[in-house]
Every structure is written in structure tokens, then in C-alpha cells.
Amino acid sequence: MKTILTGDRPTGKLHLGHYVGSLRERVRLQNSGEFDKIFIMIADAQALTDNADNPEKVRENVLNVALDYLAVGLDPTKSTLFIQSQVAELFELTAYYLNVVTVSRLERNPTVKNEIAMRGFETSIPAGFLCYPVSQAADITAFDANIVPVGEDQIPMLEQTREIVRKINEIYGEVLVEPDILLPQNQVCRRLPGIDGKAKMSKSLGNCIYLSDDSATVAAKIKEMYTDPLHIKVSDPGHVEGNVVFTYLDAFCNDKETVAEMKEHYQRGGLGDVKVKKFLQEVLEEVLTPIRKRRAEYESQPDEVLKILKDGTTAAREKAAEVLARLKGAMKINYFG
Ligand code: TRP
Image 1 (cartoon, rainbow, N blue to C red):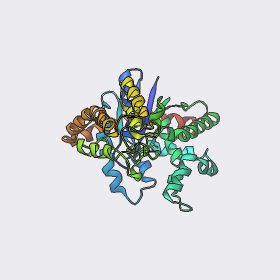
Image 2: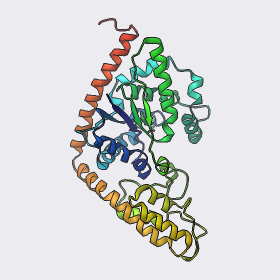
Image 3: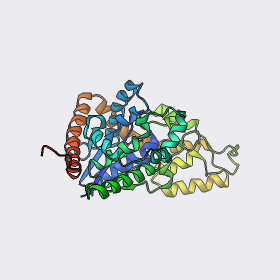
Image 4: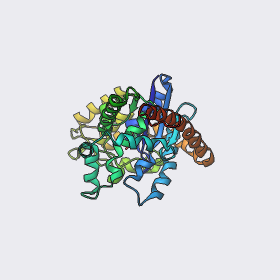
């Protein structure tokens, strides 16, 4: 069996970084026909680990993320889309996994460490937040997933999941499937910079182009995009490294030959930013137009979207219950048969 599980926290609308870093690849995997089962989870419970005081934000974004999923081409007849908090089995699994994880190991998780620093938690770290990598191990193992397509910031989560799986299997016998991470092959897709040239496109940095942005918004964002500060006159030789417009062309344009020619021309001098930006705009419009169209279709039928999530969640629960029963059996805590 080849089973995929992956997902996102619903803390905002999804952007181009999500698209090249994971969504585009998910759709490709879905349509490859190579997988027996694909589970895509909206991780609302994980989002609540550092948003306990803001449940409205999480709730609103569950729908936003669902619309983004459907808009990029995730197809509910091929992929099971579901909501984490409604699969109670995940929390039971988490409770048992917590017993094989040390607090110091949790404190060493580099992604969590970095998030704690960024959020300024210092000594007031929510316990649920510190433990979310364990709940993520539950998310993955509950579906017997062996392939987890995610961005590189999730490498430590997968490492920790694999440790938990090995520990559980060592104690209770071979009950859990050990997953492999699947990273985007293309280096630029692993971490798309923001329009300001900062290392990462991120909502908190305010440097995103969203999948739901309309043409005019995208055009305005491209206009202010960071290029080469040393490229002042059109005739000046320019730099393409660190030039966001070229980075995005690498990530989004399928016509590699044209991009290579433009890079060469830009470096030689004589190619203006306005022209390159105009080309990028065309490329992005080609990517975003079908996404916007599908988004609008689903936006006009919210009941249908809810039904997709409900059916997906029912199916997800069924699978998670099976795995939980298997673990409880192995742990000898299946008293009533
Ligand atoms: N941590 C992921 C994110 O930040 C979301 C997530 C939760 C996830 N559980 C998962 C991803 C399991 C892959 C597998 O978006």
C-alpha cells in the first residue's frame, strides 16, 4: 500500500509559497494514480495550540484552506479531505505516544524552538504547543501513511515521528508504519522568498501573494517586488541571484529556455525590470486563472464544500479507528474485546 498523509494549519489563506512548496506537488501525486490512499488534513487542532484565544480565526480559515485545496485541483473523489479536530482517535493516539517522548527531546525540536522564539513565548510555552510534534506523529501514523509530502521546515517533525514509531514498535511489536518524507525536488520550491526578497514568504512578514488574490492585486505586488538594487538603468548589467522576479520565474515558468535567455540578457545589460515583471505577471496569471475559477465555483456552494469535508472526515475517522484499535490491542488495553 502506498498512502499519503499531509496537511496545513488553518491560520491564513494559502499563498504561492504553499503552492510551489507543496500544493502543486500534491495535485501531481494525486493525479499520478500511483497512490492507494491520499489523506489531506486541515490541522485546526494544531493551529489552536498557539491560538487558543482566537478560535474564530481558526474556524474561518478552515474554510479558506478547504477552498484553496479545491481551487488548486485537489479532487475529493481522489483525495480524502478532512478536519483534524473531528477525528477524536488522533488525540487518543497522541496520549499514548507522549509516554515515549521526553520533554527534553521536545525542547530540542528545531522547528518548535524557532517558532517559540518567533512567537516570544519564552517561559510561557503552551504545553500543547510544545507537544504538537507528537500529535503530528499521530496524524501520520493513524492512516498508516508511508509518504508525507511536506516542506523542509517539517523535516524535524518527520524525524520525531520516525523515532516515536520505532519506539512504539520496539515496545509493543510492529504496529505502526514508519513514514518517509517527500520534499519538493526543486531547490527554489523548497523555500520561496517573499516579494520583498526576505528568505520566506510568510503571512506574518506581509510579503505574500495569495492564491485568492485577484489580477490587480497580483499586478500591484509584482510592481513592488524586490529586484536588483544595483540595476538602475536598463543598460546596466543586473544580478539574477536574490532577484525575486527571476526566482519566481524559476519556480513558475515552464519555458526554461526563455527564462535562461532573459537571465543572460539581464546580466549582460539592456533588459529592464518592467519587462521581466510583465513576463512574470503573464506566467502567474496563467497559473492563477484556473485556480481562481475553481475557487469561485466552490465559493458559491458552501454547503457542497462542507459536505466534502464531512464525508472526508467520516472516512478518515474510520481508518484512524482501525489503527487505534490495533495499537490498543498491542498495548493490551483492549479489555472488552
Ligand atoms: N505542521 C504542518 C503545518 O505547519 C501541519 C500538519 C499537521 C501536518 N499535522 C501534519 C503536515 C502531519 C504533515 C503531516 O502546516
